[in-house]
Length: 394
Image (cartoon, rainbow, N blue to C red; front, side, top):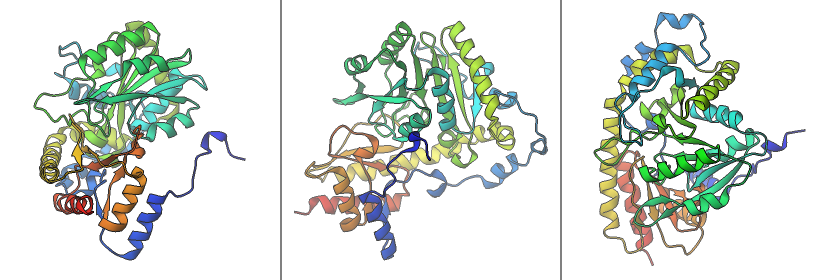
C-alpha cells in the first residue's frame, strides 16, 4: 500500500527508549543536545519580532515565484561585502535568489532539478542525518565521502573521486560542518570546483551556520562561486535564530549559461509549491537586522560553555575535544570500549546526562560524543561535571 521510498525503520531505538523511561521517572535530565535556540534562554526582542509580522500588506496575496523582490533584496544585502573563495568581495543578484519555506524544501527542489531517479549525491561523513530522508523522498541515492581528522578536519579527495560514478550529479558540502564545525578551505573549494566543472556536476553548499565562525574573520561563502554550478543554501533558522519562521533561500552561481538555466527551472519548481509565507517574507528585512544582537548572545553562550568544557577536559584522562572552527557543537573523543549508543544509554541511566552518540552523525567508527554548546550555561556546567565523574569512575 505504501511507497518503498518511505520504508524506513520505525521501531524505537534503545537510546529513545532509555530517554522515555528516564523522563517517566520524574528525575531531572541534563540535556546537552539542545538545538532549538528559542528554548535556550536568549533575550529575544519580542515586540520587534511581533511588530514585523503585523504588516498590513500581509493581508494581500501577491505571489512571486522566486519570492517577494524586497525579501530577496534583503538576502542580497546580507551577503554584501562578504568574500567568496576567490578572496574578493562580490554582490549577489536578487534574480539569482529563490526563497523556500526551509532548507529542506530547497534541498528537495535542487535534488529534483539535477537528478533523475536513482542518481547519486555525494555527502560528507560525518554530517547531519537529515539528508538521508530528503534523498529517499526524492528517489536519490546518497554516497558518503569521508572527512578526515588530523589536527583538524579535511576533505578526503582521494575517497571522493573513488566514489564518483556515471550517475554522480552533485557534491554536497556543509560549511561549516554539523557537527564537526569544520569549514571548507579555499584550496579544497578550488579543487572541488575544478572536479565538478570537469564532470558537469553541481556543488550544493549548506551554509546555515556560516555566521558562527570561531575566529575573528568572517567565513567565506560559496554564494559567489563561478567555476562550477553552485547552490548556496541558508535561512532564518540559524542566522536570526528564528527556526519557527520557516524561511530559507537558495543562491545560484556558476557559469552564466548553466546558472541562468538552473534559475529558470528552479523558478518553475518554486512556482509550483508557492511555499514561503507572505508575512514572514515581508518581515525578512527586519528579522535579518535583528540577527546581530541575537548572534552576539549566542556567541557568548558558546564561548562560556567551551570554557567550562575545556576546563573539565584538562582534568580528564580519557576524554578530549576535537578542533572546531565554527558552528555550535563540540565533538568529544571517548574510550571506544562499547558502542556510542551503549555509552549514550549508560550516561542517561547512570549520570542523568543526554548527549548525542557519534553514529547519529555517521561517524565512521565508535568513540565519539556530540555536545551542543548553546545549552544554558548552568545546565551545561552540571552536565559536563557529571560526564567528568562518570568517566573518572573505575
